[in-house]
Image 1 (cartoon, rainbow, N blue to C red):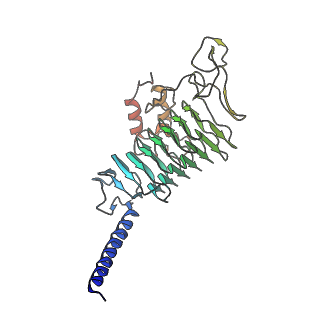
Image 2: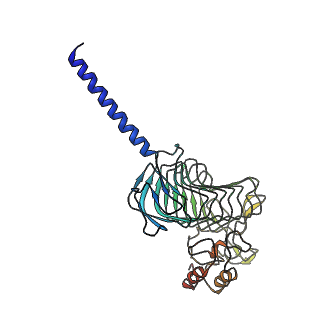
Image 3: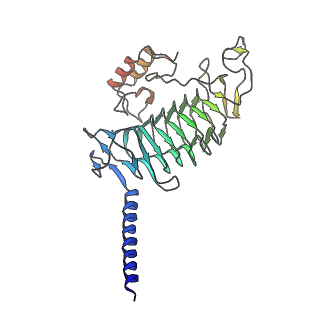
Length: 359
């Protein structure tokens, strides 16, 4: 056999073996998981996440092709605007996976290219705030969760749908930008007593898709622009905050504003349409807004009347010591960590914001 041929064949074999080894190593690395363990430790220890107190964690650089799995109660993760980028929206992976834990906050992370940007399962009092969750199959997927909050996030270009709540309860979605999502912006299935307030919901397949006996939910002060709402088998939902607070802005609402008052029969306009916005026979916005709502959220406005006053203090004080799941629980009074209980820190936070208004 030609000696040169043998040498070339051997070199090609070495090259192919080296490339295979590199690919295999990269593949293992790509499918890895970063754990924040129940004892507060980080595994692997060289992951780009730091903590000095096993309570507050900081992401120190961009993270690629990893899932961050949180097993510790009371965790706060600050992404410092770093990226968490997955390996593809059709690959069964999550950016953050949170299951069977409580009182976790995730903030300031840019999450992209995952099947689920954030996956929540059987947990409570999770706060997802000020993140950019772009170009995933789902931005946030929640199943069997209670008293969780999405606050101030930008969520867009989700291919399967943006926010998906399944069998969830007392979920708050407030002050978010939800736009350009395929199929729907928010999907609610078999979920109760959720609040969707102060959001800009625009250019989605459907703004909200509500189904399977999702009852007792409150949806108001949102801007629905270039998308409609689809309701299936869901009743007793509240689509406005009464008069004069009003309901939602609907870009396809074509009626006039000539009158005012709770019955819209008093002469002068008031920024509220004279006739209701009809969604279906069981769901309507009684006080549709004539102009887009300016999404302003005041922390500590427990009763959502646009100001922080003695009523908010009294409401919070009346349930002092109440824990999530107990009679009388009101997540709007739970404004300071540790979440899940109304304590002195909540009262102090409300008092510190006393006098603030939306105007």
